[in-house]
Image (tube, rainbow over all chains, first blue to last red):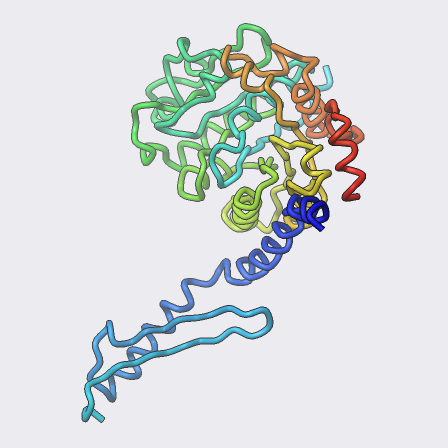
Length: 83
Length: 277
């Protein structure tokens, strides 16, 4: 078992290859887009401030990338009773 | 002489990441091309951090530089430094004192046009990064050599640079392409065989560009830069030097079979190699 682990531990190149392939597939698709999250944040801010008294720091936009599905999380804080 | 009726080729040597061997490779390939009779100019675009002069052993002969020529302070002939060992090899150094913004696109365009008239090959040694300096170095290139180490951060940055070559060069803007060549440096065949290091196939698959050469990790390369001589001149029989000669011939359009650089393998290496094959 320990001998097998010895061999296994050394083969880090396949891990490197797989990580690079996933990362670059994503980066190539987004290469020419401006920072999508920043753009979304500004546009969401513009809509929200029409109806609610929120400050810039009250809107948080985060994007999490999964293997098949990505999630966009928008977290907006505003004073209770404002709406 | 066959080089006379060849159109000049402007080749940028680039990588994104620093420290992968752009300057060493520019010097070695430039020398190898010149050693085969081609007229070669190597141009240092790393304004403020010039090093091509040092690697070529011409650091005490720099009088004028690229920026002086673009600004008309000196003409091209005054700035070009002829190599003392190979008479068809010339260096156009970068400025060490000026700000990198002193380099204008128009100025670079004019200098490159002049170099095209006088040389068969113009090798542009790019600064690291993806900013203005790197973009100016690639701007007027016909072809690109992307220097890559078998390591994740280097491959990622190479991919980024390929994106710029396909969008920010004059050729790309005119709907043409900059021909790309991958030059893998600091390669250790035994470690790649054991699965410890990205293999050549991995790198080419990921970057989807053809291979110009594989330069093995070699003590000779460091020895060569220590003494200010491209390894192809100081140690022509060295494995890295032979790999640079082969790469230079491929750049000239010759077919040269791609051999993995020879390296003595210990019995243990052979055993491990079989163990994971």
